[in-house]
Image 1 (spheres, one colour):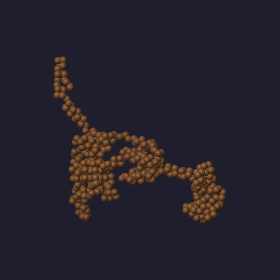
Image 2: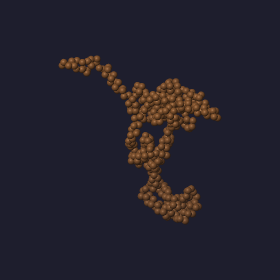
Image 3: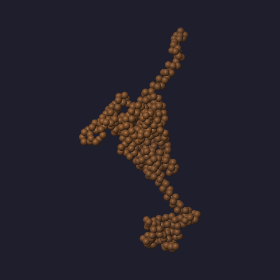
Image 4: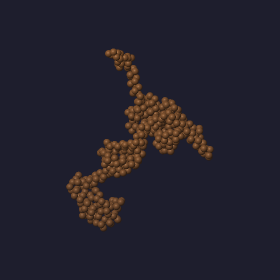
Amino acid sequence: MASKNTTKLTASSLKLFSKNADVNAKMWDTELKGFHVKRTATGVSYCLFYRNAEGKQKTPTIGRYPALTADQARDLAQQMLGKVAAGADVLAQKQATRQAAEQKKQQTLGAYLSEVYEAHQRRRKSGDQTIQMLQRHFSDWLDKPMDGITPKDVARWQAEKETDGLAFETSKRTFGALKTCFNHAVKTGTIDGHQLAKCQLEKPHLTDDELAEAGTARRYLTEHETQALFRGIDAYQEEKRQGRRNSRAHGKSHLPDLDALEYVDHVKPWLLTMFYTGFRPGDIFGLRWEHVNLTFGVIRKVIEKTAHHQHEPRTFPISKPLVKTLTAWHEQNGQPATGYVFPSASSKSGRLDKHSMQKPWRKVRELAGLPDDLQLYTLRHNFASQLILAGADLLTVSKLMAHTDIQTTIRFYGHLQPNVARDVIEHFAQVQTPDQATTTTPVNGGVHERLG
């Protein structure tokens, strides 16, 4: 058995040891029991060997040579032995301190996003976008402990975002994502709680212009606008066809002849799908052939906006014009059994980007002569509004719009039934009033009208 290498640890002995010792070699101090140095692959460390109150061997690291001199390290070792004599386990304390520091680091927003929440969000369709959004909008908070972020911090953040011109709805959605992240941190035990549970963003006051716009933002198409929309869609197709004719006539004959196709691209069938279903854009981007039954004229799918808490698919009837449109589009694309109805040729997922319809919509709107402020989402509002104006009941419209409850439908579209209450009471009066209720009888020599 090799003899124990012992000597007084000094500057000169440590210099020789550092230069000549093999990895894992130890040199023990003759001045203080248990105090020694150890050669590692990266240098020399001061250590202390002792037994705790249970008799278990412990060897904590005191520091690194030459950052500490031998005398400094020996003094620290002496202090440790004093604590051991008092019944303390210095290694356990050191490990607990390190663990607490590491846990505190994990409790910062930035660490939690990168080390825990990112893996959780990868399971979701737009998880990467959520992480990027949180890191971008809350960059000043990444080094803060999550449980230390206060409602006052949120108020300052909202004020800064308003100054930057960020829309309130965007701020609201972003802040909601942050609270969801904090709730997940509580669920995983990373933090015990947070201060934002009851915190809400303060809705900004509307300007005079915004008040004027508020009444027209959720609108429907007039008959003239509907006709213009369909003309604009066809004009878009013709413009694309003419551009292709020019290209084929000038040396690009290899390009497909768009005159031979029903649809020049996805734009017309995409817009008609939204027009005839009132679906949110995200549900059309995510629409798959597996969801569509052209034989029975139905679409059955999970609504993306509420998919996190409503997992069951919903069934939506589709009109004959849309069945005809999707049938032609299906045949034009080779009658696929699966895959996106409106696929992307460039994205890895095969799904169109959520902004991919903005440019085509501007072009259609321009060709149709429609107002510049007419949003694509107006097609959804138009669907619901026209149904109600045609006499559909609010419950049916609520189901077709995939609202979570009928109160949403009533709040947004109930005003389109202003005459229903009057019609009902007039009908009641006509049916329930006796025939003699409006006859007149003399009273005290005069005439008195019986009101019944």
